[in-house]
Length: 469
Image (tube, rainbow, N blue to C red):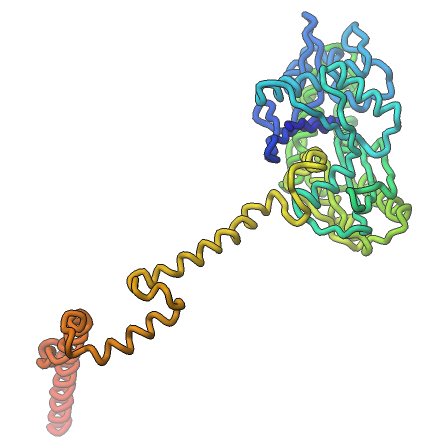
């Protein structure tokens, strides 16, 4: 069965296909596994999704919604002069995912799995199911995000989590933070405790950077900065959009480098931001996430050291300070990953997938397939006796010994076999007697003699000169 997994995120949506043989294949959008969840209603009525929406947002920001998931409780969203129900807005993004899935499969998938925050109630989950229906999906199977993440660590990475043990999921995404403790059961995972912060995520870090810049440029360029923060026309809205795009890029860059520059379009100024400055902005938010994680662990009646581990997922968990504060505050070094955005959806697909037992991760399967290659090495061992074809029936080590013993008494009569070993034996001793002319064939000896003669002659000359004096 071909299954499509979707993680509809605040900033980005990730989708992965699981083929009938168990292989997984991420859907790519403009060459990236992450599709921006943004939408833009063009003047001619077309709905643009993802990067196309972001590119056109500068034309008229009033027609643009960068984070539809944050609007789930609003009922409807205004794009330009049109009011669109939230499920329909979600469906526009999901339709883009389905179109790419059909293109790669040649038809629709047989089943769909969608992940959602563990704290979502029934009403929010129903809105997600309604959006899938409007997008033309079969009824999706809903999986809590922490359960998907935990399944990734056991089924995909092969992390050992014995039944009854628990692990914590630190999920810092673009718009929200979720802390969850799950426990391994005979059939999968169950949620023991969950906590969350609806106002902490990558977007809030962006706002914090803008406020930090405003402390400097809001004073030196007060009027221009005020228009940038409170745009009244399309030009100022475009400038504001450009500012936040640069801020987001600089934030991501500071996870890898020590500093970054941010262009302030309306001021025509490049502001310099260091990692230390960004960490000062992010620290209050990140400290709140640590406190939230502590509450979740206490709610599960666990201690940090009792857990199998603390695992970081979500794009904003890339911030180095997040892992450092967890280690410092909870006394446990968390596990981080190169692609934390895909962990949840890939784990959701691994639930009930084709034979992928715990301890046999996909990432490790090539290594586990290598040991089975060693048994063929057993048949390769008979290759040495291949030259001794008559010795196949006996054991592998006995044939070489058995022929050697009879070969010695049979050396005089059967000259043909003796000639083969005898010739190399005679050639090797015949070579040493050849170099009898040592003084001419050994340059080192000749050189030593010459040096000795010269030294003797020089000594005699010096002795004669000293006697004459």
